[in-house]
Image 1: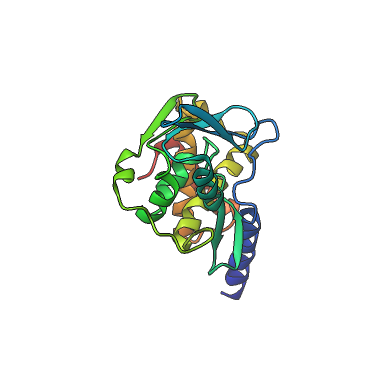
Image 2: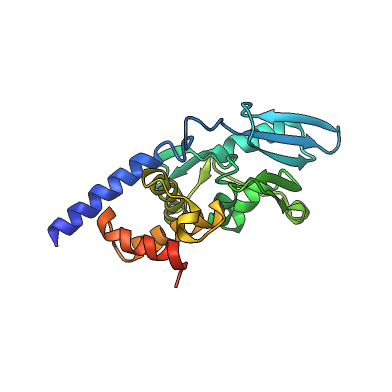
Length: 221
C-alpha cells in the first residue's frame, strides 16, 4: 500500500512539473499561434502573441486596452489556492476547444466574452467557429482575481489533454493505425483514456497501455 502511495505521489509530482509551464509549445517545429482580433467598431485588426500561423481569429467590439488586459489575465492561470501558477495557452488552436470545454460557465464567460465569434483551424485543418454573442448580452463579469483561477477538476481535465499529446508523440501514433481519419478524434480518445485511467488509479504507463489501446480502437465504452 505504501509503495502504491509513493508511486502515485511521484507520478503526481511529474504531472505538476509538466503543468508548471501549462501546455508549452507541443513541438519546436510548430510555430507559436497568433491570437488575431478584428475590431467590429473600428474595422481594424490587432494581433496578440504575434508569431506565425496557425492562429485563432476573433471578432470583438472591445478596444485594444480592454482586450489586452483580459487576454493577459486569462493566460495567467493559477491553482492550488494560488500556490501554483503557469501560462494557459488557450490561444493555441490545438488546445482552444479543450480549454473551453474544461471550464465552468463563469470561467468560460471570463475567457470568451471579449469576442462575439472565435475562429480557429483544428488539427485536421478544418475551420471551426464558436459563436459567443450570447455572452455579450450578459452583465459584465466581475472577476476579483488577477489570474484565471482553476479548480482541481479543471486541472485534471486539462492535464489529460497534455498527457494525450505527450503519449501521441512518444508512441508515434497516427489515426490510420486505429481505423480513424481524424487527428482530432484520436486526441479526444487519448484524453478520455487518460481521464479513465486516472479514475481507475492506473498510474504507470504499463498499467495504462491496455486501456489506452482499447479507447483508441473502440472509443469509450
